[in-house]
Amino acid sequence: MRRREAVRFLGAALALPFIPRSAETAIKLGEALHLRLADVPFRTLNRDQQALVTNIAEMIIPETDTPGATAVKVPEFIDLILTEWASDEERAPFLAGLTDIEKRAGTMGAPRFVDLPAAKKVELLTALDAARDDKSGAGLAFARLKALTVYGYFTSQAVDVDVLKTQMFFNGYQGNVPFTPAV
Image (cartoon, rainbow, N blue to C red; front, side, top):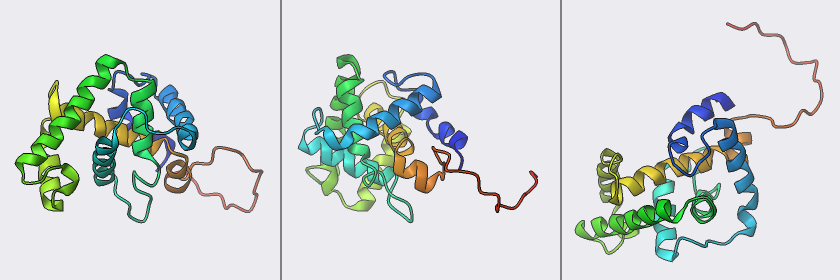
């Protein structure tokens, strides 16, 4: 996958009101935020919200032969975006939507989403994905969480280097690479 393809994946994130509209600016912002994650504690999401966001982000992009969302600190990235980039008017509906997700988990037989069996989690997230155009509640929160997960994932250095295989810095000429014509 090339950087240009990653920009396509970021399209959903660019629909968020608090993300810069220019794809290149959004990528630079995401990369800069990732550099700060080790130094910044969670400030917006409480423990239950952290667990919920972590669980859903890992379901959106699970660890396989590549790192999952949790491995590249997507939950911390989301908290930093909510804390420093989202306005109160943007943050409040998202947090209310997380509460709504927990309430819906309660109607499915668990006190919290993280306590649901895997099949019930998939069922709930599938329903929320169908409701992603909602203007409030769980559907809105899931749509934003999904977009932020993709944004955070594809702007992380680990994904950029290990998954997308882009090299940010020139490390010299290697003349031993054979010429292959473009097809």
